[in-house]
Length: 461
Image 1 (cartoon, rainbow, N blue to C red):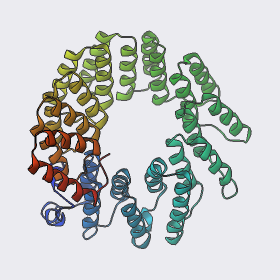
Image 2 (image 1 turned 90 degrees about the horizontal axis):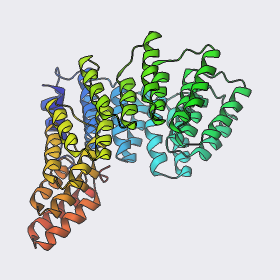
Image 3 (image 1 turned 180 degrees about the vertical axis):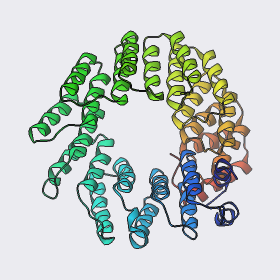
Image 4 (image 1 turned 45 degrees about the vertical axis):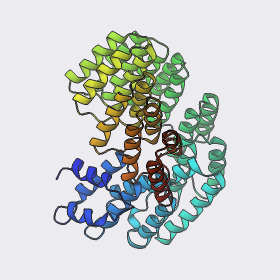
């Protein structure tokens, strides 16, 4: 059975309302189950934004027949942390400590700490880090610079730079920082938009004896590009080459995007040509950067031609390609072209990521075309994906306002039947319209569904 089919059946199962194991015995029984199949199914469940507790059930079931792999462990932990199932995440780590200590890696720390840093206070995050250290030490694992880097990365990902610097200074008392430490903090300053702080920190680190690498220069180039300081970015490129640090595909991708920010699509194309002269092979990210450059210059024809070229050359279109084009078409008021591109995307059986789904849902609902939003919803569900909670908010509101309360109720119910707790906003909107219609039976069923799931599953993210 294909991975997509297995993941779809698991995603459609009403767990935790009903046990999932009987289905898993049918789908993943030996000798069908392999490490490769398990990794693929878990990755598909994660991409589908399903209930992370299902991923945990699949992982636990697999332990009866297979030794766990790092990738399956990380994917399961990611699914749990994303839905804020921190208790289950902790239990999973403790189980790894007792049975599979090799699974306790810096990546596992990053997956959990990044969500803790997002949803909990700094003090709670640090306390959790200290508790995690005990788990690592209990497994006989070292807890050094790589683990501290995981905490720094989690804080920097949430732009909590003051706390990150405090941790960095505290870290010196226990272990020596490395170039990755420097790059994590550089990236944090860059993402927070503070170029001056980034440069001050960079020069401070160089004075301390750190040798910047390609990633260090790429981060600085990206910071200047995002601020529209393209000439400064080119100066960093020159500095990079003077230090005999060879620019990479990522370097040129960033510069092409930067040329687009200053609306210089000619320079963006020249940079692509320069890449080719250097023997670097452009990937889909490079073409997406060029696509963005054309669209920032409002050159829609060149952007459309580039998308055709990407397909002709076998590079293909990814979610960034579609999202970039949909954003531009919506901004330009080219709604008909949005529908046209959406139709082509569906014809290609391409499954967009959640930010693209939300963008399209917003576009359809703003255009008073909730029926198109419903088609998108059905397309995603048919592919085995649980659309994002915000997509449900938009669709339920639009459907109800158009008098299609039954359809809104159906979509809401589909999410609950898959073990996902819908957002409070969708519930309140739908409840309000059902009250107006005096549909007592559906109101009672709605409240029952929500109460049953809220006690077991966090709200949809």
